[in-house]
Amino acid sequence: MSPMMRAGTVLFVFFVALGACSSPPEPECVGEACDPAPADMARPPGGVDPSCTTPRGTLWKSVVSRLVMPTVDEPCAIDVDGDGLIDNALRGVVAGLRAAAFDLQANADAVLRSGELVQLVTLQSEDPTNSSCAHVTLRRGLRPDKPPALDGSDTFAVDAAIAPAQLWGTIAGGQLETPRPQAQTAATLVRLQLSLPGGFGVEVPLPLLGAHLSGRVGVQGLVSGQLHGVVRMSDVETRMIPAIAQVMTALIRRQPDSPSARHIIATFETRAKCEAKPALCCRTSPQTCEITAEEVRNNAQVKLILKPDVQMFSGDVWSPTPGGDAPDSLSIGLCFTAVTARF
Image (cartoon, rainbow, N blue to C red; front, side, top):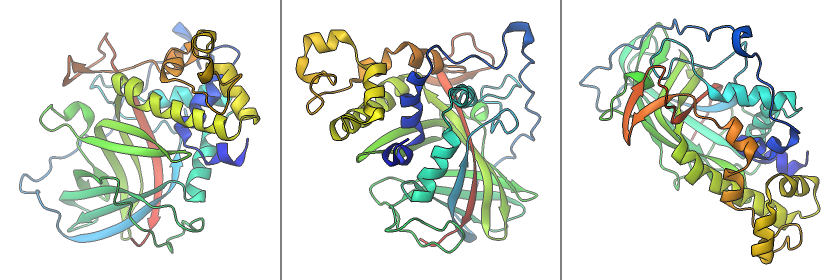
C-alpha cells in the first residue's frame, strides 16, 4: 500500500478495500451457529448534577495516542438501543476486511503516528476519582511539522476551523461515564460533529448522534476510553459517501497509474456514466474524471457492509427502539488510549 493510502483516513481505506473481496465478506457465524450477542452488564451511568452547567475544577489535557479497532475479544461496544445487547456494526466491517487482508488497525496507527489526525481531549472535574460534574471537550489539532512522539511530551495547536464537541458526565471510582444513547431524549441528544482527514485536503464528516464516552481517569487525566454512538444512514449516504467519492477522485487525478487508482476504478466506476459523460470517465480521462457519490452509494458491496443495525428514530425524531425491526442507523464504537499533551 502506498504512503498516500496509508496516510488516508480509516474510512477511506475501508471504502477502497471493499473491492478487494471477490465476494462479500463471510460473517463470523451463520444462523444457529451464532452465539447470542453478549449482554451489556455495565453499570448504568449516574446522573449528572443538575447544577453542572459550567466546567469547574482541574483541567487535564490529553491527545489520543491510539485508536483501537473493535474485535471479538475487544468489541468496544455498549448497548446502544436499549435491548440489553451490545452493538457495534464497525466490528463486522473490521472482521470482514481483515479476512480480505486489509488491516484497518495498521492504518489507524499510521494516521495518528504521522500526525495527520490529532484528536485533543480536555477533561475538567473537581475530583478525578468521584464527581457528579465532569466536562469533556474534543478538539481537532493541526498537523504538526513533524510526527508527534505521543509520549506525553508533545505540544499541539488547536484547529480553530473545526468546532469543538462537548460532553457532560460523571466519574465513579475513576471511571468516566456520560449518558448512554438509549438514555438520551430528543431534548438531550448529544451530537458530535466530528471529522476525519480523508487526504488531499478533504475532510470526511463523522456526524455521531447519541454520542457516549466512557473512560479511565488517572491523576494525569483521561488515559483510555471508548467512544460510542450512531451514524444515521441518511448522513452516511448524503454526507460521508460524497466526501469519500471526492477523496477517490483526487487520488485518481493525482496518481492515475497507481494500483490504488486502478483498483478504485475497477470497483466503483460504472459503464453508464462513462457512456453518458465521457469527460467524467476515469478509465479514459483520469485528469478530468470523477468517481461520483452515486457510484459509491449504489455499489453492491457498500450496501451489504454498511447495513443499518439499530433503530434510533421515529421519523426524524430521536426515539431509540430496543431491538427495532426498522433499523435506520449504524452503531459505532471505538476504543482509544490517551497521553498528556500541551495545547
